[in-house]
Image (cartoon, rainbow, N blue to C red; front, side):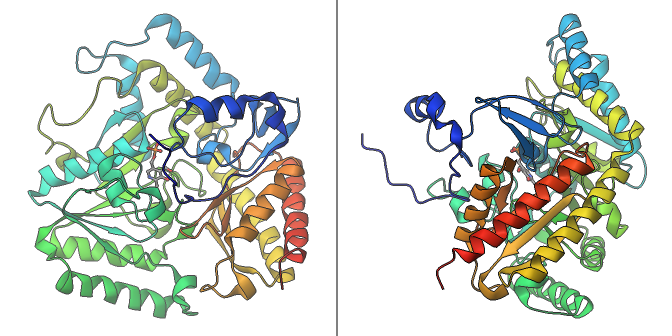
Length: 451
Ligand code: PLP
């Protein structure tokens, strides 16, 4: 069978200097090409906010394993908790017997993330699984099937996750997709070209209400699923007033509000949950990435009465809440709380924003700088025009950053956003070096643009 020509997905691969090790050739020979590959880096170890490649080069990490390594690579307390748990109990399955670390993680999540009253949790292995389970729970709780989601959304690569995901490049050829999924525009003010936030929110909520008369009946909807800050879709925080309006619409129609906090959650935005910035409490929320400090674990957290609507046997999985991942999660949450990584994220975010804004002031092609806490993005568009995205410029900047020893990832439906998601333990000095590199890379790549 010949290999099909696959249109390029999100961000094209950035070439690294470690090609000589041959690892990428081995990967190309045996690993399915459908698994994304943002760079050709061959990474051997990592610590804190630094990666070490096969040549022993130290690279400042502004990607954090796509928003995972908030407590830093190889945090000693997380590693020690993993060691101890591995020696005691590797697996038994929560469906077979109970073990303390699973219950302790659920207790911690319920304490840290109260959903407006008694709160429960269940554990899974990934963000996509968390989203799948949240939707199943919402359907059982409401007796309704429909889910309303947004453009720009990313909710994972399982078939329902992919259905809920918006970007076509992430789902091409994978259908038929799950039924009863409806989509409206994410409140993306820069793309809408509306200067005034209050005016924009009014328009966006009116469009949502219109969708409930023109696309799907509200009484058909089990849930509205939203990332409070769009991650893969380009680091776009939903305006607080929009989230508040969404909450009100859900309440009016008995629709459950699900916040997907897989990328934005657990200190990243300066709060435990990004939805806290808007003073909104969802009925259900989904978590993964940063929770395990590097090990795979995800969670659905929700209001007691909603979570309890799930019939025994309908949620869970063999490995969900594995003891070792739970031990890592408990250590991770302990470090986050003790070291106040929420405050650290807010401080880092302020520093990043200031630097990105000064880059924007010196380049006509930085159309927008936005984000919440240490979840920041810079959108590149020719002459700042949102209708003329510049993904090649984003790729060129990422490549030049890597030459300078800084890893930065792309994002956005058009691949024209650079996102800054450092481990929250990054030092001020490393952050400054990384942002200097980003600034130099932007200046150099902008000069090389064809006029
Ligand atoms: N939801 C959001 C908001 C995400 O950003 C992601 C992954 O990037 C997912 C869900 C899927 O998570 P996972 O890759 O762990 O399945």
